[in-house]
Image (tube, rainbow, N blue to C red; front, side, top):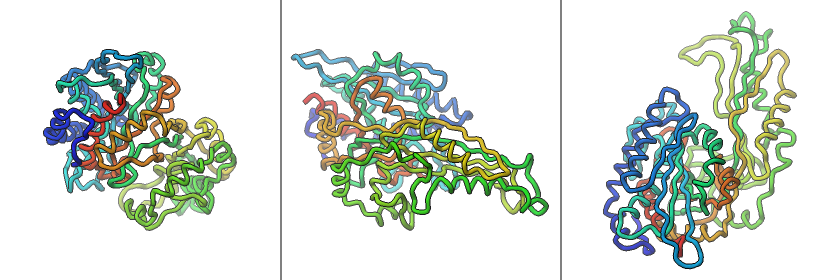
Length: 466
């Protein structure tokens, strides 16, 4: 682990070093709880994960509150506001994160069970390790240690941790207007993203938005014998494949009329800065186990995954899925798919464009139903704000190297809403890695980066006040 941040009081820095093993055990204990918000069978465990975190913060002296919603509760906590000295008020930060996790399937691809955390080669493997339990816990532990030290926390830190980020944050979005006064802050701090590469920490200054859908294609009233009916009755699975294929062109671009109309171009200053990062396509492909990369022509890999729209099929279901052969012509076929959106794009307008495209290309002999799920606009933060500069100093102290400024291809739908409702800046400080496997089997988190993240968080509250 890197040396203790020099901006911290020495006794606090020593405490962070001396308690590394305890922090690791806290992480493992929390990761054991299968808090899958999308699985109704796991409701009790999602509440258990919230209770675990509440008790951790209460024990350290944070003022905490469990805010009920129509779904899973919001956890709110705050530290005491410091005494005001001088003419300029000290900043207030709101740490946002989530205690729910993605489903772990397919289970057979996990080396060790997803909710039995295992440490291998300095990394902890478990669902939620990096997304987002491990990352948000760094901030909780850092603030807890500040409160339990003899030194007062130099600024007020608030927490809002939700249990429905992985299913769209709809209840948080509904509650946000009436929580605005309670959550009032100068900057929202989020660690739910990645470093640029191993040993190259990053401050993320933008996130893509998202629009998700389920498409159902209906054919005959029931599954049919493919020998008796094949070639005469339109196969919904084939029709679904044709529809999904029609949304992409042969070069890797999206072929939906009007989809690029509102896309904002990437500023030249960012394109030039990203080229200096030294992205290596071959290494990037190898890191995810791909034989080659692809995508929209005319853009680099970083530009495609950070600042250009993309379309992905997330799941396909039709016909016989069990062992062996069953020669049916299925009655229906389902696809789950999603777009990642960039600044300028409106999820509602994208839905209209997608529906028009699918209706225009729907084969005769089948009907379709498009079911929009959740959507959110892209988010951009100020790369030159004083909070970004403070975070850069804190990260350099903890990681031993200055962070680079990047964007992130993933989405945190609620952040744009935070910016609008709270009129605040946003800091995205990722401690994970691109190959940590968030949403995939064998999700992991480097324990070294976990501890560095705790140090960086503790230092951040000092660097923000000068």
